[in-house]
Image (cartoon, rainbow, N blue to C red; front, side, top):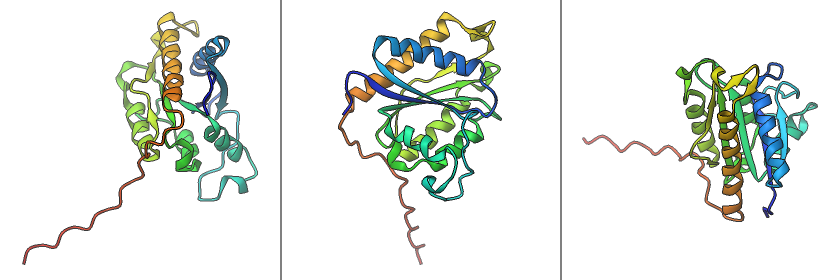
Amino acid sequence: MVENTVRVTVVIGSATPPGRLRRAVAEALERAERTGAIAPALIDLAEVRIANADGTPPEQLGDDTAATVAAIAAADAVVLATPVYRGSFTGVLKNLLDHVPVEALQDTPVGIVAMGATPHHFLGAESHLRDVLAFFGALVAPVGVYLTSADFADGVPTEHAAADLDTLLAAVATLARATDGLSLGGARPLPRRPKPPKPS
């Protein structure tokens, strides 16, 4: 049951050392935690070892995969933060999601944060992530956050960027409380229907 404090797991989907995206998200988590609204857990994929997804159950792997998947499954809400790479989200984040069972994200509120060098990739990573999250039947927040270099001054998030992140965290927490205990029948992929026979 979701109490007043919502357990939010945030995944930084980058294999490179922590940078501006990590700082912006971590500071937003700290602000939300101080209000008592959320109990955060931050997972940085640059700091954990996740196996290549080859169908082996996470609990049989001798690295951080099982603990990372468990942290996602235990959350009341999840935020996925990713740099834009080749017009989409990162391969390391996709690899992690390939380990996550459907039920871990089914009916779970999920927020999306993407960061690109320019505004040209706006919605690129987000739209692809939404497609993947639809497979899980996750409850994706209607509006995500997109950051660029213009949203930082000397590596520090601008007030506008910080406010957008605060709003996203508040939204997923509110969604978690509103849907607590509800089974919304998260959608699995529909079976392929046979083609009707051609008329003779």
